[in-house]
Image 1: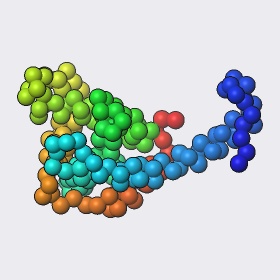
Image 2: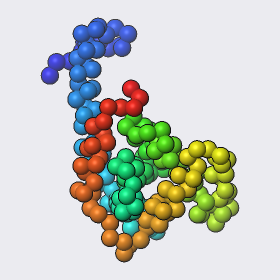
Image 3: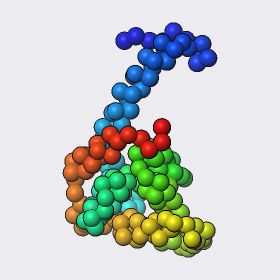
Length: 184
């Protein structure tokens, strides 16, 4: 494989950057496959939960699908917690950043903020502010985020729920991640 010669970005030539751009575009095309591979590896969970992170994600996406959500929302529901592995203290922002180029402003906002909205269900048990989400009252996507959390996310820890397997969501992931990015 041909490689660039520069050791500092400022020394790169147009031809070298065109070469890198070609490789980057090909790499971007593989994003959906990498996400599917990553998701299939979420077979562990934090101690204490009854289900794996993968099962939580599958339950959330299955509930969205059952409620006739659009494809983008179903994929966002599936991927909403992908940040848990590498960014547990800001997992929502991590997941939202991965989704941002491929989803609407609304879907991005819901995923980015869902962690704060989820605090409603547990923060008071840990001497925290369960109403942290209230600072967003009046925002156009406030109620949509409450609905995401209430109807799909917070109830998806059920070991008896029959979720669809990851394989069923693969075409939707590939569809969403093959879109022309919203922001490039």
